[in-house]
Structure formats: structure tokens, C-alpha cells
Image (tube, rainbow, N blue to C red; front, side):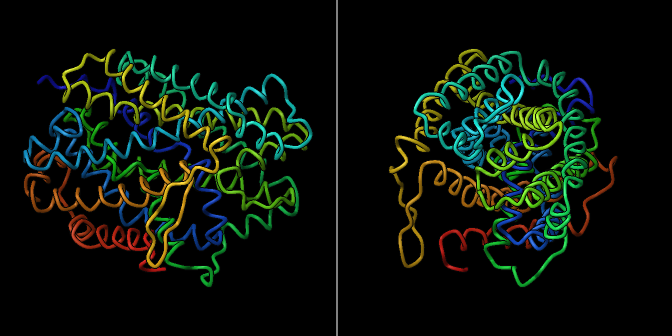
Length: 451
């Protein structure tokens, strides 16, 4: 099999990789988890988790991908034919995320257009959000627009048009977040209270649930445990220093997440709005805040444009994981693989979207120690992918690198035979002990064995 086309430049790769990490997880999900988790205490735990597992996991997955230069399944099979199932788990996790990620991305596109072309939400942002997301048709239309755009872009390959687009999208996204963050922290005295809540930890708020949420948020946000960096690593040339690349990606993702918290939590406090809105936080709270402030329509347009960039940059890499597997494992050409994946994801998007409206009473059981919980389709997909498949993927990658590939061969790929240094003791300790321990805690928590 021929190796896939390599990235045109190191900067282009880093922008695509950072774009894959910096997405809805940072700007949409991180702020409401941070608020729910006690603000400052969640932030501290999140940063510690990033330091403990982000860089080692990105390194391991990227090295596996570069070693084969192919898809996530073949990457494992080339080292040991019995271990391809890890790649299949990664593909399953990725497509499940696409089932709901495109839907929420459609919401972002709708809000962006509303800010730019209308500039009004009927006087009640909460009612607008509820009316829109529960409508049986409108959210599906917007998600299909996004799905078609991303699919068309993927026909040209991730190292061509996507790489070129990401070079401009990611720096622009960060600049717009900084502008929104500075603006948010100066809107009122209440904004400073929100900033204190966000930055000053109260460890009385710490629970196992806060820890589990922080861990899974790192997995989702950075993109580890579900083969994303194996896919991206397949195109990385030997000249790249994987250790420094992993450090940059981990830093960029964390910076974007923390920055998003600076935008949203102080804004909500400043406007006197309850920020415990869950998935609706960005849409209900931020639209109401921006439109009630001088120049708010312009700032709101910039904010949702930044969020749209984050959505698209992530989806490019998410789609590539599944498309590449179809190309190589099922011998499909790129056009056929892209169309098939788009159709599958599109059908699932319809059901997930309807789950917020006409199918809101449809619940799926979740086994919980001592009882059975029932979740809607979005919540179930989010829970199973984030709290089961991603932690499982991390455990298996650590086991694979340390016991199957072995440290010597892994180090040779990671450091290009010593050119880029060597493995550290922490690399081994994190893979042997820290990462598996963190993942076991998450899995035990989501099934109710520890609380």
C-alpha cells in the first residue's frame, strides 16, 4: 500500500492538528462543564490532567500513525495483526461523535447567519433556542448544509484544501477569541465576579464526578483515545519532531479552552444570567448578552464565526478517520468512501436532531450500579463515546505501546532513532500507571461504582 500524501509544511500540519483539537469541546462544552464543576477547581483539575496525559497520548498516537502512514486499523495491524481492533474502536467512537457533532455544528451555523443577516432573536434568546432546536425540520436543514460542505472539502483530501484553509482559520479563531475574551471581562462589575469564580478554586467543590468530567473533557477536547492523531500522524513526514509537535498541540488546545472560559463565564455573570445551561449555554446566554451590549451584534458575529471555524476544522479530521479506513480496509475510492460516510452520518444526524424535539421522549437505558438510567440519544452517544470508548482507547494504546510494540521500537519512531532526544521516565510512568488509572476511575464513575 502506498503511503498517503504528506503535509505541505509543518505549520500546515500543526494548524490542522490544532484545529482538530480546538473545536466545540473547547468553546461549547468546556465552559459549562467548568461552571458545573465549581469553576476554579475544575480548571485546576483540568490543567493537571492535561499535564499528566495530553502530551504522552498525542505522542503515542501520532507515532503509531506515522509508522504505518495508513488508516487507524492498519496502523496497529502492521505492528501486530491481532491488535487492529483498537483502530476499529477508534472508528466507532469517531463516527458516534460525528452523529451529534454535526447537529450542534448546524446550530452554530444558524446562529452565525442570524447574527450577520438578521441581528435579532425575537427579544427572547431562550425561546428562540428552544423553538429552533425542537423544530422537526430547521435544525436538520442547517446540519445538512454543514455536512455537505465538509464532505465536499474532504473529496480533495485533508492535505490539500483543508490544510490550506486551516492555516488561516486557526490563527483567526484564536484572535477572535482573544477579542471576545477582553470584551467579556470589561462589560460590568459582575463580570469580575465570574472571573473570580472561574479562576479561584474552592476545593470543597471537588468530587470524583468533577475529576471524571475533567478527564473526559481533555480526551474529547484534545482528541485522544479515539485514533484521531493516528489518522493525522499518517501524513507526518519523518523530519517532524513528534515530541515538540505534541507539546504545541496540547498547549494550543488548552489555551483555547481556558480562553473560551474567559469569554463565556464572565459574560454570563456580568449579565446576571444563570450559566448552568448545559449544552444550551453558548447559544442562549451568549446571544442574549451580545445583543444587549453596544456593538454586540458585531462581537456576536465574530464569536460565532470563531466557533464555526472551530467546528469545521474539527470535522475535517473527524471525517478523515472514517473515510481513510473505508478507503484502505474496504478498497473504496475516496469519492465513494466520502459519500457513504456522509450518508451514514446524515441519517444519524436526523435522528439526533429529532431527539431534541419530536423524539425527545425516546430514551436509551444506561446501566448504573444499583439502578438503570435513561438518556436521550444525544446524551447517550456523548456518554458512551466520551466516558467509555475514549478511556478504553487510551488504556489499549498504552498497553499496545508498552507491551506489544515495546519501548525500544516506539522510541525509535518517536525520536527518529534518537535525533529528537529520547523517552523520559515520565513517558513510561504515565503509560504504565497514570493514564490507565485515570481511565479506570472515569469508567467506574460513569457506571456508578464510585461517586
